[in-house]
Image 1: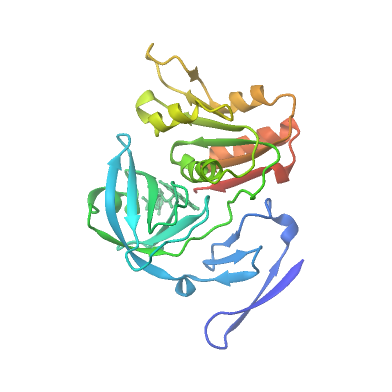
Image 2 (image 1 turned 60 degrees about the vertical axis):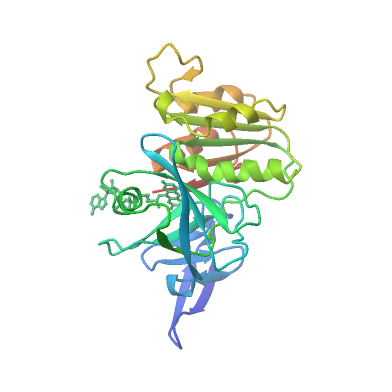
Length: 287
Ligand SMILES: Cc1cc2nc3c(=O)[nH]c(=O)nc-3n(C[C@H](O)[C@H](O)[C@H](O)COP(=O)(O)OP(=O)(O)OC[C@H]3O[C@@H](n4cnc5c(N)ncnc54)[C@H](O)[C@@H]3O)c2cc1C
């Protein structure tokens, strides 16, 4: 158990008791949502919204990837380079009628030293921020964006196979990570990407995945749960069956899972039931 005392505003002090043993992944920041503060276990720092650096981001391109998913390219004109790490996310503050007026979005591209980054965003028909992004934002619009956040990171040296598991836009930080590994030639073994979605029309980054699949060190396994067309000659069903089959002999693998709560929870439980250790299973949850 650790006790941290933080100075938030002026001389107001807050003391927080943390039972670190209860966190499931020590690489993940523990989000104290009720206070809306973040505790970062690696750097022993805590930042509230007011202490974050904020920038004006300019939307420089939008690509309609599927009927419900768009890629947003955002430039930070005030910076020469907007430096994030693969796997991190940005906060965007929106003019929406909500007590919580910001949302988090993972970087979908790998860091390239430029001041432009990419987000992969799915429209929630009942969602405030995504409706704003899809209906009010166009090329040239500006958005209030934070400095990069988060610890969903892969180490600089990887000596096991890596398995990335995601559904839908959960692919965003995983794409950032595997492109970063490949672009920077970070030592690694085999990379598996297991991607679940419903229909062929929901597949994303199709051409890029075809290109990457030509590599000896990269296997992409898309799994469609509801497709009925004969044109689909790939896997059908649920993505969980894929890693259960592929890794039933329990080879050393580090898992990176990202997406919505139910999928992430099921994947973590399955992997632990198979015999993998908690510390081999890294995850980022979107809700
Ligand atoms: C670290 C992180 C990274 C993320 N990265 C991505 C990403 O790369 N791409 C992406 O698309 N998303 C990402 N998300 C999710 C994103 O932050 C938003 O949660 C998502 O876009 C929905 O926001 P929204 O404002 O449109 O929906 P919200 O307005 O927040 O609503 C979400 C859902 O909750 C329901 N709801 C809202 N209020 C109520 C209420 N009072 N009672 C009952 N139901 C309610 C709505 O009907 C809606 O279906 C990420 C989340 C996290 C935490």
